[in-house]
Amino acid sequence: MLRVAVVGSGPSGVYAAQTLVQQREVPGVRVDVLDRLPAPYGLVRYGVAPDHEKIKSLQGSLRTVLEDERIRFLGNVEVGGAALPTSRLLELYHAVVYCVGAARDRLLGIPGEELAGVHSATAFVSWYSGHPDAADEVFDLPGVDTAVVVGAGNVAVDVTRILARGTAELAPTDMPQPALGALADSGLRRVSMVARRGPSQGKFTTKELRELGTLPGVDAWADPAELALDPLYTDPGAAAAALPAVARRNLEVLRGWAGEPPSAAPRRIALRFYLRPVEVLGGPGGRVTAVRFERTAPDGRGGVTGTGVHEDIEAQLVLRSVGYMGVPLAGLPFDPVRGTVPHAAGRVLRAGRASVGEYVAGWIKRGPTGVIGTNRPCAKETASSLLQDAAALARRELPGDPLDALRAAGLHPVRWPGWLAIESAEAELGRSLGRRSVKIPDWPGLLAAAGSPGPAGP
Image 1 (cartoon, rainbow, N blue to C red):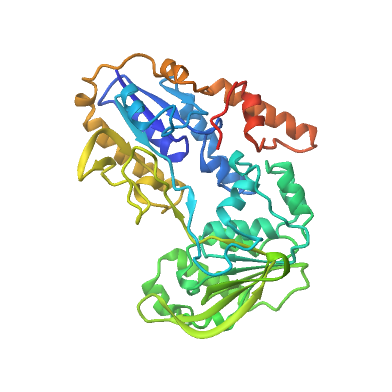
Image 2: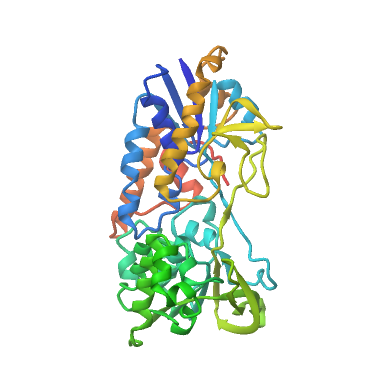
């Protein structure tokens, strides 16, 4: 029997586990899916916006995989720390597949980024999604009249939409009660989502972009003059030849917004283009008051160049959403430039050579690219490499059930019944608040609900 540990229970980890147990070439594979959190599903639970219930419903298919009798979920297990170094994990399993994502956001690298009211979109998403590591995050939303979101991807669209949505629309979701209350107390009336390049280069998908224009009580607007700076916007024929279909559809959505007169809606979303942040401006008390941008222009090579013309956009809240980076895991090699673990078809490389029994999948393998479905072929490639190595890997005798060793190391794994208890507790919390299931947003609450005596913790 080949025993494999998959570290991470998000889509890439679950898809890797599914491929390993459902294939027929190597019989008898058993997989333990380990996660630092006591709850499974990774970014599907803690990264998909709470108002995107269709995408969040993917949890159902992930759940079916994790309930397979050949797969065991072990939450509240931190890999890479003193209790469970990567070297020890490899002693307990024939192979380990690391699917640990890309948890760190990129900085803008400009003056004033440290001012109060400036946050990463990652932290904001974790907060409103109930991630226990974000339980102590403070977003001082009362008194925030205007916000700036820097970035042009789906995460930027998500946080823009959540800021602009009415509380009545968010109440039916599983958003934690403290986040829902803070958003309800906000007097926000304008959100500017700002990109340094043009509309044809936006990384958002059309469905998410179009949704901004359908929010009740919200006016979505794009500046016609800025859109006209993009040669592919002004020449639909050239766009049809040069752009993928999603980018062409995005331009059509923006054309519609630019042609609409302003409405009397109480809130406005403004999409701004060709503006590069150069400084965050502050006022008394060290709090952000505005962001200074430099106007950019196409350089003819797919990039932009500065023009020396500046514009200040008022903001009491700034969220940066300019990409993610992988975080080094102690004991694994790491490429700090790419933010990934070096690999060949998923096999971890040490000094250029494949490390026996160590594999990667997901964002820590390829970087933060693609959508949720992109993780499936990525995981299959890694699983295929592992299965090709299976005969050699299985020759090594293991010391026994890894669960015993984890407990002996002082860890307190949360197994599947513990997760089901968390689900029940969240459903009960929702009923007590007159809502549907509501997330428990902190470590003590999650572990108490799971019946676990001790935390892994942040």
